Image (cartoon, rainbow, N blue to C red; front, side):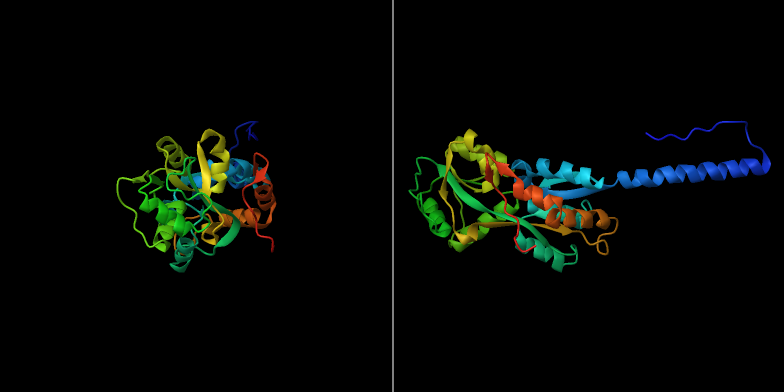
Length: 283
Protein backbone atom coordinates (compact mmCIF):
# COMPACT_ATOMS: atom_id res chain seq x y z
CA UNK A 1 0.00 0.00 0.00
CA UNK A 2 1.32 3.42 -0.96
CA UNK A 3 1.89 5.78 2.02
CA UNK A 4 2.32 9.54 2.50
CA UNK A 5 4.86 10.39 5.22
CA UNK A 6 5.40 13.97 6.49
CA UNK A 7 8.99 14.85 7.56
CA UNK A 8 11.09 17.92 8.49
CA UNK A 9 10.54 20.95 10.70
CA UNK A 10 7.04 22.28 11.36
CA UNK A 11 6.29 25.04 8.78
CA UNK A 12 5.13 28.57 9.71
CA UNK A 13 3.23 31.34 7.84
CA UNK A 14 3.25 30.95 4.07
CA UNK A 15 5.36 27.84 4.30
CA UNK A 16 2.62 26.27 6.47
CA UNK A 17 -0.04 27.04 3.83
CA UNK A 18 2.18 25.74 1.04
CA UNK A 19 2.83 22.56 2.98
CA UNK A 20 -0.89 22.01 3.56
CA UNK A 21 -1.66 22.52 -0.14
CA UNK A 22 1.14 20.16 -1.15
CA UNK A 23 -0.01 17.50 1.28
CA UNK A 24 -3.65 17.85 0.10
CA UNK A 25 -2.58 17.49 -3.53
CA UNK A 26 -0.52 14.41 -2.69
CA UNK A 27 -3.42 12.81 -0.84
CA UNK A 28 -5.82 13.51 -3.72
CA UNK A 29 -3.34 12.03 -6.19
CA UNK A 30 -3.27 8.82 -4.15
CA UNK A 31 -7.03 8.77 -3.56
CA UNK A 32 -7.99 8.98 -7.25
CA UNK A 33 -6.51 5.64 -8.34
CA UNK A 34 -7.71 4.08 -5.08
CA UNK A 35 -11.28 5.13 -5.91
CA UNK A 36 -10.92 3.63 -9.37
CA UNK A 37 -9.68 0.36 -7.93
CA UNK A 38 -12.42 0.40 -5.30
CA UNK A 39 -15.22 0.52 -7.90
CA UNK A 40 -17.85 -2.10 -7.16
CA UNK A 41 -20.51 -3.36 -9.52
CA UNK A 42 -23.73 -4.52 -7.88
CA UNK A 43 -24.92 -7.36 -10.09
CA UNK A 44 -28.46 -8.66 -9.58
CA UNK A 45 -28.39 -12.14 -11.05
CA UNK A 46 -30.12 -15.50 -11.01
CA UNK A 47 -29.87 -18.71 -9.03
CA UNK A 48 -29.21 -20.68 -12.22
CA UNK A 49 -26.03 -18.73 -12.99
CA UNK A 50 -24.89 -19.18 -9.42
CA UNK A 51 -25.86 -22.85 -9.04
CA UNK A 52 -24.36 -23.76 -12.41
CA UNK A 53 -20.97 -22.42 -11.30
CA UNK A 54 -20.74 -19.84 -14.08
CA UNK A 55 -20.46 -16.83 -11.77
CA UNK A 56 -17.43 -18.36 -10.06
CA UNK A 57 -15.87 -18.91 -13.48
CA UNK A 58 -16.31 -15.39 -14.87
CA UNK A 59 -16.61 -12.77 -12.10
CA UNK A 60 -13.05 -13.10 -10.70
CA UNK A 61 -11.73 -12.81 -14.27
CA UNK A 62 -13.73 -9.60 -14.79
CA UNK A 63 -12.16 -8.10 -11.68
CA UNK A 64 -8.67 -9.12 -12.84
CA UNK A 65 -9.26 -7.61 -16.29
CA UNK A 66 -10.87 -4.33 -15.18
CA UNK A 67 -10.08 -3.72 -11.51
CA UNK A 68 -13.83 -3.53 -10.80
CA UNK A 69 -15.07 -5.75 -7.99
CA UNK A 70 -18.46 -7.42 -8.37
CA UNK A 71 -20.99 -7.94 -5.61
CA UNK A 72 -23.42 -10.57 -6.91
CA UNK A 73 -26.97 -10.32 -5.57
CA UNK A 74 -28.44 -13.74 -6.28
CA UNK A 75 -32.21 -14.00 -6.55
CA UNK A 76 -34.99 -15.05 -8.87
CA UNK A 77 -35.38 -12.85 -11.96
CA UNK A 78 -38.50 -11.15 -10.60
CA UNK A 79 -36.77 -10.10 -7.40
CA UNK A 80 -33.57 -9.19 -9.27
CA UNK A 81 -35.52 -6.74 -11.45
CA UNK A 82 -37.27 -5.29 -8.39
CA UNK A 83 -33.89 -4.75 -6.70
CA UNK A 84 -32.74 -2.88 -9.80
CA UNK A 85 -35.88 -0.72 -9.82
CA UNK A 86 -35.18 0.25 -6.19
CA UNK A 87 -31.61 1.24 -7.02
CA UNK A 88 -30.05 -1.69 -5.17
CA UNK A 89 -28.29 -2.98 -8.31
CA UNK A 90 -26.40 -1.43 -11.21
CA UNK A 91 -26.96 -4.27 -13.68
CA UNK A 92 -29.26 -7.28 -14.09
CA UNK A 93 -28.12 -10.60 -15.61
CA UNK A 94 -31.25 -12.69 -16.01
CA UNK A 95 -33.24 -15.02 -18.25
CA UNK A 96 -36.81 -13.81 -18.66
CA UNK A 97 -36.93 -11.92 -21.98
CA UNK A 98 -40.47 -10.56 -21.70
CA UNK A 99 -39.84 -9.20 -18.20
CA UNK A 100 -36.52 -7.69 -19.25
CA UNK A 101 -38.18 -6.00 -22.23
CA UNK A 102 -40.87 -4.54 -19.94
CA UNK A 103 -38.12 -3.36 -17.57
CA UNK A 104 -36.49 -1.44 -20.43
CA UNK A 105 -39.81 -0.16 -21.82
CA UNK A 106 -40.69 1.23 -18.37
CA UNK A 107 -37.46 3.23 -18.40
CA UNK A 108 -35.64 1.29 -15.69
CA UNK A 109 -33.13 -0.33 -18.06
CA UNK A 110 -31.12 1.23 -20.87
CA UNK A 111 -30.93 -1.75 -23.21
CA UNK A 112 -31.04 -5.53 -23.16
CA UNK A 113 -28.02 -7.41 -24.56
CA UNK A 114 -28.23 -11.16 -25.12
CA UNK A 115 -25.14 -12.87 -23.72
CA UNK A 116 -25.77 -16.60 -24.12
CA UNK A 117 -28.40 -19.32 -24.36
CA UNK A 118 -29.04 -22.87 -23.31
CA UNK A 119 -32.26 -24.81 -22.71
CA UNK A 120 -34.67 -25.93 -20.05
CA UNK A 121 -35.33 -29.63 -19.59
CA UNK A 122 -38.12 -31.52 -17.88
CA UNK A 123 -36.67 -33.93 -15.34
CA UNK A 124 -38.38 -36.76 -13.57
CA UNK A 125 -37.88 -39.97 -11.58
CA UNK A 126 -36.46 -42.84 -13.59
CA UNK A 127 -39.67 -44.81 -13.03
CA UNK A 128 -41.53 -42.09 -14.96
CA UNK A 129 -44.98 -42.59 -13.37
CA UNK A 130 -46.71 -40.33 -15.93
CA UNK A 131 -45.20 -42.36 -18.81
CA UNK A 132 -43.92 -39.38 -20.77
CA UNK A 133 -40.25 -40.27 -21.43
CA UNK A 134 -39.27 -39.23 -24.93
CA UNK A 135 -42.20 -36.84 -25.37
CA UNK A 136 -40.72 -33.81 -27.15
CA UNK A 137 -43.89 -31.70 -26.95
CA UNK A 138 -43.53 -30.07 -23.54
CA UNK A 139 -47.20 -29.07 -23.34
CA UNK A 140 -48.25 -32.69 -23.96
CA UNK A 141 -45.77 -33.85 -21.31
CA UNK A 142 -47.23 -31.47 -18.73
CA UNK A 143 -50.77 -32.56 -19.54
CA UNK A 144 -49.77 -36.17 -18.88
CA UNK A 145 -48.26 -35.20 -15.51
CA UNK A 146 -51.45 -33.41 -14.50
CA UNK A 147 -53.69 -36.25 -15.75
CA UNK A 148 -51.72 -38.74 -13.66
CA UNK A 149 -51.55 -36.39 -10.65
CA UNK A 150 -47.85 -37.22 -10.65
CA UNK A 151 -45.88 -35.13 -8.20
CA UNK A 152 -44.33 -31.98 -9.66
CA UNK A 153 -42.07 -29.54 -7.78
CA UNK A 154 -42.22 -25.90 -8.86
CA UNK A 155 -39.64 -23.22 -8.09
CA UNK A 156 -42.59 -20.97 -7.13
CA UNK A 157 -40.23 -18.06 -6.51
CA UNK A 158 -41.00 -15.62 -9.33
CA UNK A 159 -37.72 -16.58 -11.01
CA UNK A 160 -37.07 -16.83 -14.73
CA UNK A 161 -37.43 -20.60 -14.46
CA UNK A 162 -40.71 -20.28 -12.57
CA UNK A 163 -42.09 -17.80 -15.11
CA UNK A 164 -41.10 -20.15 -17.93
CA UNK A 165 -42.84 -23.00 -16.14
CA UNK A 166 -46.03 -20.93 -15.76
CA UNK A 167 -45.96 -20.04 -19.46
CA UNK A 168 -45.61 -23.72 -20.35
CA UNK A 169 -48.57 -24.71 -18.14
CA UNK A 170 -50.58 -21.99 -19.86
CA UNK A 171 -49.55 -23.39 -23.25
CA UNK A 172 -50.80 -26.76 -22.04
CA UNK A 173 -54.15 -25.16 -21.14
CA UNK A 174 -53.76 -25.91 -17.43
CA UNK A 175 -53.53 -24.17 -14.06
CA UNK A 176 -51.65 -26.65 -11.85
CA UNK A 177 -53.10 -27.14 -8.38
CA UNK A 178 -53.61 -29.93 -5.91
CA UNK A 179 -51.59 -32.09 -3.56
CA UNK A 180 -49.47 -33.35 -6.46
CA UNK A 181 -48.19 -29.82 -7.23
CA UNK A 182 -45.51 -28.75 -4.73
CA UNK A 183 -44.42 -25.10 -4.39
CA UNK A 184 -40.79 -25.07 -3.25
CA UNK A 185 -40.10 -21.33 -3.11
CA UNK A 186 -36.33 -21.83 -3.32
CA UNK A 187 -33.48 -21.64 -5.84
CA UNK A 188 -32.74 -24.06 -8.66
CA UNK A 189 -30.28 -26.35 -6.92
CA UNK A 190 -32.45 -26.66 -3.81
CA UNK A 191 -35.54 -27.30 -5.94
CA UNK A 192 -33.79 -30.16 -7.74
CA UNK A 193 -32.86 -31.74 -4.42
CA UNK A 194 -36.48 -31.53 -3.24
CA UNK A 195 -37.72 -33.10 -6.47
CA UNK A 196 -35.15 -35.86 -6.10
CA UNK A 197 -36.17 -36.58 -2.51
CA UNK A 198 -39.86 -36.71 -3.44
CA UNK A 199 -39.53 -38.61 -6.70
CA UNK A 200 -41.09 -35.70 -8.57
CA UNK A 201 -40.98 -34.06 -11.97
CA UNK A 202 -39.33 -30.63 -12.20
CA UNK A 203 -38.35 -28.04 -14.79
CA UNK A 204 -34.64 -27.19 -14.72
CA UNK A 205 -32.07 -25.29 -16.73
CA UNK A 206 -29.68 -27.77 -18.26
CA UNK A 207 -26.56 -26.17 -16.74
CA UNK A 208 -27.61 -26.59 -13.12
CA UNK A 209 -28.77 -30.13 -13.82
CA UNK A 210 -25.40 -30.92 -15.42
CA UNK A 211 -23.61 -29.77 -12.24
CA UNK A 212 -25.84 -31.81 -9.90
CA UNK A 213 -26.68 -34.76 -12.16
CA UNK A 214 -24.44 -37.31 -10.46
CA UNK A 215 -25.97 -36.50 -7.07
CA UNK A 216 -29.57 -36.87 -8.25
CA UNK A 217 -31.72 -39.81 -9.24
CA UNK A 218 -33.51 -37.68 -11.84
CA UNK A 219 -33.38 -38.19 -15.61
CA UNK A 220 -34.23 -35.98 -18.58
CA UNK A 221 -37.81 -36.88 -19.49
CA UNK A 222 -38.58 -34.25 -22.13
CA UNK A 223 -36.26 -31.96 -24.08
CA UNK A 224 -35.88 -30.33 -27.46
CA UNK A 225 -39.13 -28.37 -27.73
CA UNK A 226 -38.28 -24.87 -29.06
CA UNK A 227 -40.41 -23.45 -26.25
CA UNK A 228 -37.75 -24.68 -23.81
CA UNK A 229 -35.20 -22.14 -25.08
CA UNK A 230 -33.43 -20.31 -22.24
CA UNK A 231 -31.98 -16.90 -23.15
CA UNK A 232 -29.73 -14.91 -20.80
CA UNK A 233 -29.24 -11.16 -21.16
CA UNK A 234 -27.59 -8.29 -19.29
CA UNK A 235 -29.52 -5.06 -18.73
CA UNK A 236 -27.89 -1.96 -17.20
CA UNK A 237 -30.07 0.16 -14.93
CA UNK A 238 -30.86 3.61 -16.37
CA UNK A 239 -29.22 6.27 -14.22
CA UNK A 240 -31.70 8.83 -15.49
CA UNK A 241 -34.55 6.84 -13.96
CA UNK A 242 -32.72 5.40 -10.95
CA UNK A 243 -30.21 7.93 -9.56
CA UNK A 244 -27.03 6.69 -7.94
CA UNK A 245 -26.40 3.58 -10.01
CA UNK A 246 -22.93 3.00 -11.43
CA UNK A 247 -23.76 3.03 -15.13
CA UNK A 248 -20.08 3.29 -16.13
CA UNK A 249 -19.16 0.04 -14.37
CA UNK A 250 -22.29 -1.63 -15.78
CA UNK A 251 -21.34 -0.62 -19.33
CA UNK A 252 -17.83 -2.02 -18.85
CA UNK A 253 -19.33 -5.34 -17.77
CA UNK A 254 -21.74 -5.45 -20.72
CA UNK A 255 -18.91 -4.95 -23.21
CA UNK A 256 -16.67 -7.46 -21.43
CA UNK A 257 -19.27 -10.22 -21.13
CA UNK A 258 -20.85 -9.81 -24.56
CA UNK A 259 -17.81 -9.18 -26.76
CA UNK A 260 -14.66 -9.36 -24.66
CA UNK A 261 -12.87 -11.93 -22.56
CA UNK A 262 -16.08 -12.73 -20.70
CA UNK A 263 -17.69 -13.99 -23.88
CA UNK A 264 -14.75 -16.32 -24.47
CA UNK A 265 -14.92 -17.63 -20.90
CA UNK A 266 -18.63 -18.38 -21.20
CA UNK A 267 -18.10 -20.20 -24.49
CA UNK A 268 -15.32 -22.25 -22.91
CA UNK A 269 -17.21 -23.07 -19.71
CA UNK A 270 -17.94 -26.78 -19.46
CA UNK A 271 -19.39 -29.22 -16.96
CA UNK A 272 -17.78 -32.66 -17.16
CA UNK A 273 -16.41 -31.77 -20.57
CA UNK A 274 -19.73 -30.60 -22.00
CA UNK A 275 -20.54 -26.99 -22.96
CA UNK A 276 -23.63 -25.82 -21.11
CA UNK A 277 -23.91 -22.27 -22.47
CA UNK A 278 -23.79 -21.08 -26.07
CA UNK A 279 -22.79 -17.57 -27.09
CA UNK A 280 -24.26 -15.78 -30.14
CA UNK A 281 -22.25 -16.37 -33.30
CA UNK A 282 -23.03 -13.04 -35.01
CA UNK A 283 -20.59 -10.91 -33.06
